[in-house]
Image 1 (cartoon, rainbow, N blue to C red):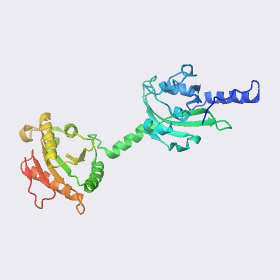
Image 2 (cartoon, rainbow, N blue to C red; image 1 turned 45 degrees about the horizontal axis):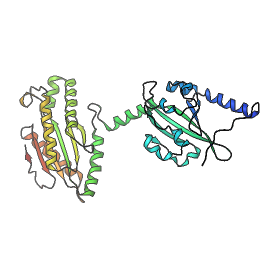
Image 3 (cartoon, helix red, strand yellow; image 1 turned 135 degrees about the horizontal axis):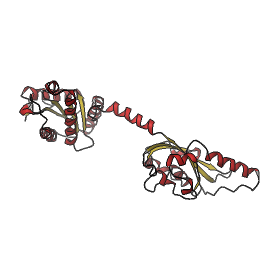
Image 4 (tube, helix red, strand yellow; image 1 turned 135 degrees about the vertical axis):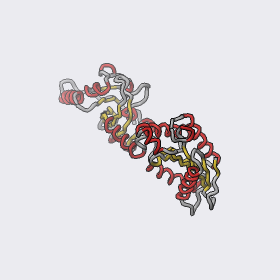
Length: 338
């Protein structure tokens, strides 16, 4: 559908008076607002928009440079997508958006904007509404903005608390349970192996009693960093299982691959050389249990957890600071120790 610029009101007529009133009203709205004409040039850049972006109106009026108030490099704003009939691109440009098929009545999207002039990042809720003449031709697009940064940061923090361990920043037990269930179903469907590594810090209660809880917390954070460094794939999960116990879920990994990861962990913790007078060799060590399975119909994921637990406790009973591996298929705990 074609587009044309808004017709200029007749001088001295009612239309001119109403036009001026509308422009003045929009200028002093408390909601940050700008208006593009049918060619994508800025018609209005109100006072609130100046305050939000730090960009004065005289820098953008009559230009297509309004993007520079929100981003470091050229890219369309939501109003531009409406003007240029490019709403199919909204999903790639905005972190959240409504169904764009009804754009005749306006569209909504949300995005982090870097705000170059202010040197700060804001999360903006954005609404863009087209204005048409009686013939259905586009006259202009009005874009309004709301700063939702505080609400978004609060939401992000709540999501973090729900899924991550507050002390170490890695996944919590809830995330572990959800991931294990999802991967068990997927590997069962795809006939792929699944590995689970359970890790326990040796003599951790004695460490806390000797060096204090602050040092204990620092020790756990350092260990969680080693665990995170030991994995290589986004699909792997590192979690704090509880207390001084950690767990790793390694999808599509067999016993040999899991043992390589476990060795990285033990070597990494040895390099930390955290002093522990009651530990093996005078420093903090860990016991590691590995279980692997080929999930299949009729098997339960609890069998993988039980095998990993058995392997871990076998490592602890046999002197700690070691890795013990066990396959779920084994009817008896014939474990391999290293």
